[in-house]
Structure formats: C-alpha cells, structure tokens
Image (tube, rainbow, N blue to C red; front, top):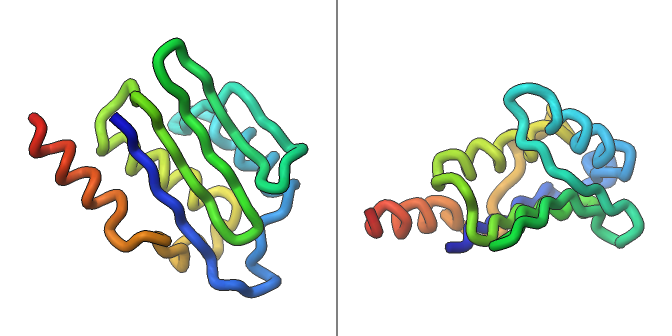
Length: 119
C-alpha cells in the first residue's frame, strides 16, 4: 500500500520554506505527538526527512513551496497518515499552514476512500 500527498504554497517569496525551517521541522517531529523521522538529508535541492524499514519507507521532501509526504507500505492506517500530513504542514510555517493546498485535489481523501473500501 502507498500513501502519498503533495502540498504547495502560493509562489510568494516571503512564504518560501528555508533549510532552517526544515531543521526545525525535523526537531519538532521528535517531540511527543510528532512523527519521528530517523534521517535528515539537507544536501539535496529538496531536503528530505526519511525512515527506511525492511518493507517500505517514510519520506517527507520539503521544497521552497512544496511538501511531499510518502508512506510506502505504512505501518499505520490512513487516519494516522492524515495526522502526519497535518503535522508536517503546520510546522515549517505555522502562520500560513492553512493556505497549503493539495497539488492533486482530494489526493488524500481518494486514498482514504480506497483504503476503507478494502476493509
């Protein structure tokens, strides 16, 4: 099973997410209630938070105006994935998290419906 969504901010210079904000996101996700990623790669164009597992991976790529979150063979259900997405979207820019929009409309909702229909 694969869960994935991509959120984007409007292309406004003041809203761009910098590398320092990505470091803060990585630290914040380790606090209680967060989703703890094991690795932080700051050397690529889009810094990446990730966790590798024997069967799958978790990844959060953060670009200047996008956040892509992927769970390949997740160890949790779609509702927890939605919580991970909300936490990742809220941390880098708390004051503007409400203006993120899914790059693919209803991407998470479609996945949730597909997941529930498998139960």
